[in-house]
Amino acid sequence: MHDSQKSNDVLGTINRGNAAESGLCTLCRADCKGKCETWSASMKGRKLLYPRDFGFVTAGASNTSHVGVSYGSLRIQGYTHGSVGVPAGLSHSTNDCTFNNVSIETEFGSKVKTKARVPVMTGALGSTFIAAKYWDSFAIGAALVGFPIVIGENVVGIDQKAVIENGKIKVAPELDRRIDTFFRYYDGYGAIIVQMNVEDTRNGVAEYVMDKYGDKVIIELKWGQGAKDIGGEIQVSSLDYALFLKKRGYLVDPDPTLPEVQEAFKSGAVKSFARHSRLGYTDMNSSAQVEEAFRAEVERLRSIGYKRITLKTGSYGMEGLAMAIKYSSEAGLDLLTIDGSGGGTGMSPWNMMENWGVPSLFLHSKAWEYASLLKNNGKRVIDLSFAGGLSREDHIFKALALGAPFVKLVCMGRAMMIPAFLGANIEGVLQPENKLSIHGNWDNLPAGVTANGLHADEIFAGYFDVQKKIGAEEMAKIPYGAIAIWTLCDKLSAGLQQFMSGARKFSLSEISRDDIFAANRETTRETGIAFMTDALDDRAKMILTS
Image 1: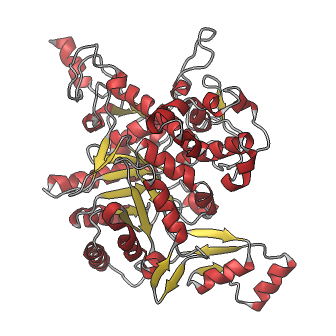
Image 2: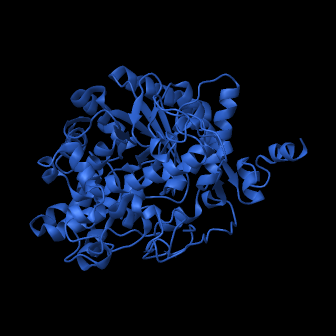
Image 3: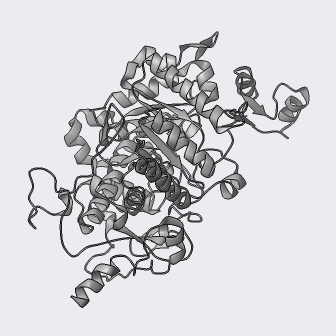
């Protein structure tokens, strides 16, 4: 499906709302009854890679017109011969060079390597209530598949059961729940990453996590994200909760302590309150000051005991991008996630999402240029993760190729949340006694689900794969949302393997920028990627003139 299309007759998918560049709806609802590509793939898995109704149809591509500069204006190269990066134990024969033998395992890190079975990670799932509601599915799904998941900012700060005394966390039940849930099924692949913002640093999140979990957890510093250039927000509809957050030190808008605001709330004129985080580095006016403060914080975290530290940055522009890449590289950090404008999983101001910052392809292209500049000057370059409106297997390949060899992971926010919503809704219908506790939103199964079956083992193509991994007895403890995440990742994995096989790259580390080309010359100018008829044109002419 072209990224701007609402429906795809070939796959039988349709977006409920307007389609974003990612192919997801601009507004993704937890109660949605389908059926976008990601929603359907969370049940069908790799079957959704192919046209529906085989044997009765023929199908032709609709994605032939490429206008503007985006990930949709990149295309993937294929080759007539060769095989590179064939996994150990296999030969270069046609018997072994099949797409299912392509290795998509990856790793990132400076001194300590973190492995992942698939080259994806979640966006930061923090203090938004939707992250808390569906956390079991998110975390268990990530642990079973084996990819990193990020606990976002402010989880302790908004937890009414958390106890913070004199700037030190004594009790943090919600944070504990999130970490413990992941480790229940963790088998050495993937990771749990805890993100910190200004308030988290003040509250001593890093110290608490280290004291309780040691260096099993990765700590992440946060400069921002692609959805907004101010601190994170949540919305609360309780005056008491708003007052609690104000007392915790947050900016709450409107101010719930003002008598006139309380009166407006009681009358119904004010129905909710927005909690905002604070901006960082507001007392610094130069990059040199930021670098000094950043280095000091990294050294502080290392002194606490952290062996793995990452950084998340947003689309602040070229100076901020260069600072993030250089400072994190020189500090020996393990991963830098670079989030282009347009994404977001929470409550970012809508017009801010629409109008601020650098869109993903532009930002990611400059990230590769700056990383290459460091490398060419003999400097170490931190491992990168690209984020911002990426949801499908073609996006994964394109991002890995665009940023090669520096990009090790592709960060997906909303795409990895959809299967959790879907699974909970299905589970709530099939097990109504659990509907409230798992936050199911349906009273009956829609046609898009019953077309696959009436029971979990019929609905989810990945059901028996999960059961094989953990055993039939343990399956009763697995939320359907986690099974849906496994099933979606099966589709993403198989699709990525197919693209890599066609590009004759049988290991992830072999993907290069030569494996993509630009569909218009404006994209070539902005990315440095060859235009499609210029790519390998010199070799073509040598063949013709030799």
